[in-house]
Image 1 (tube, rainbow, N blue to C red):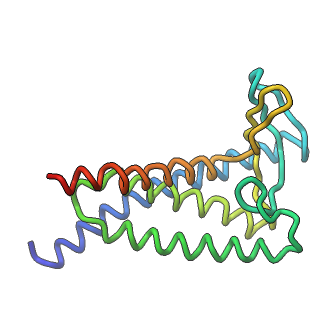
Image 2: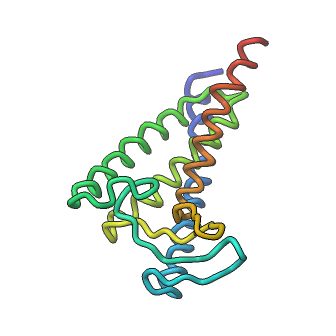
Length: 171
C-alpha cells in the first residue's frame, strides 16, 4: 500500500477514536454542569439505598490525593494530563491497523477522561465529583464520568497488555 494512503487510513482511524474521546469529554462536562446547576456544594441527593448524587470539589487527584497541598498540585495535575494525553494520542495514532481495538478503546477512554478533568482544573482549580457509592458508614470516594472513563480505559489497556498480547504472541 502506498505510504500516503496508509497514513490517511491511520489518520481516519485515529479521528474516529478521538471522536469517542470527545464524546467522553462532552458527557463529562454536561453531567458536571447539571450537578452544578442543581446541587449546592456538599449537597446530597439520594438516588438508591447505596448511591447518592453529591457535589464535591476535589483539588487533588484520585481519592483526593494531595487535596490538602498549597495549590501547586493543580498546575502539576494539569501538566500531567496534557503530557499523558499527548503521549496517548500519539500511541493511538501509531497503533497497527488490526487486532488492537481493545487497546485503542482504552487509550481513547483515558484521553477523554484526562481532558474532561483537565477542563475542570483549568476553569475552576478543582474537579467536580458527584457519584457517591456507600454502604452504611463506608463510602467509596466520590468520582465523575471522566474518572470512570480513565478507570475503564486503564483496565482495557492492562487487559490488552497482559492477556491479549500473550494471545497475539502465541499465534
